[in-house]
Length: 287
Ligand SMILES: Cc1cc2nc3c(=O)[nH]c(=O)nc-3n(C[C@H](O)[C@H](O)[C@H](O)COP(=O)(O)OP(=O)(O)OC[C@H]3O[C@@H](n4cnc5c(N)ncnc54)[C@H](O)[C@@H]3O)c2cc1C
Ligand code: FES
Image (cartoon, rainbow, N blue to C red):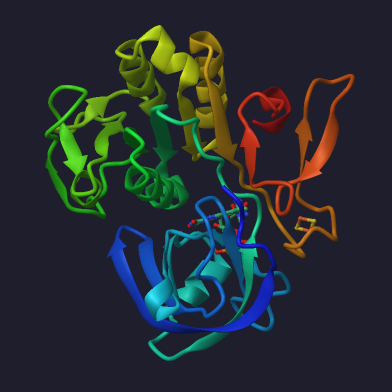
């Protein structure tokens, strides 16, 4: 996928900002100019004049007709706490769209998306986009705790046996299933990467060779997925997170080590990523 190009500095206006569940919030912003943003790209939000650096958030969705974008954010610290106080009409500076988006699978190839926690945001966007292009898409989502669930669930209608599916994804023809380490009815009990392995075992060798893995979530999860890609001879991509300052490639404060110890080099997560090949990243240095 090609990004929408130019990073813009715009004034975004809050249209909706609501708690979904357990520290997880949904934010809709009017942000003219971001209509062409693609899955994997993100925005840098200014969370307050006294907070020196903006905070990066993946784009969950764009609505070109209304010039709006959606964000799913978890309350973790000062910046996100400020965001929870934003009321309808509040305006804030925004930089975006930033970063390299996910690439597209080859023609006719299947896609398996593996999300951990709030890493769902860019993958939900990607899953809907791929499905609209006719790609057979499966999304697996790992959730850590026993917290109430932030989206509507339905019994899964296709693929992967019994279990709950995410209703809005299922309505787009996307197969989805959920994993949790604790026992929850309708969830796979275990790591989401184990569920991914189970799913890939059902693919033919040809489907695996042509298919694509996409991931976003905690580093150990993405490192395990890189191993899985290696085991099944698959290509894949991961969206990385890093502490960021400038957010547009200048400060070099967000680098990740690419390649092996001898011939490797640093790349900037903000503009060279955040999406990297699963086989590009030195996961032993990143986790
Ligand atoms: C490309 C990218 C996309 C992201 N997308 C999302 C998203 O869609 N939804 C979402 O909820 N969060 C996302 N994040 C993480 C989000 O940027 C941080 O949670 C946020 O900046 C925290 O700000 P704060 O001021 O509330 O927390 P702080 O007070 O700055 O920090 C609180 C805690 O969060 C950790 N933290 C802060 N910033 C980051 C970061 N960039 N990466 C990892 N840990 C961090 C800190 O180490 C600390 O433990 C993304 C990060 C990146 C780099
Ligand atoms: S945050 Fe400054 S270079 Fe990436």
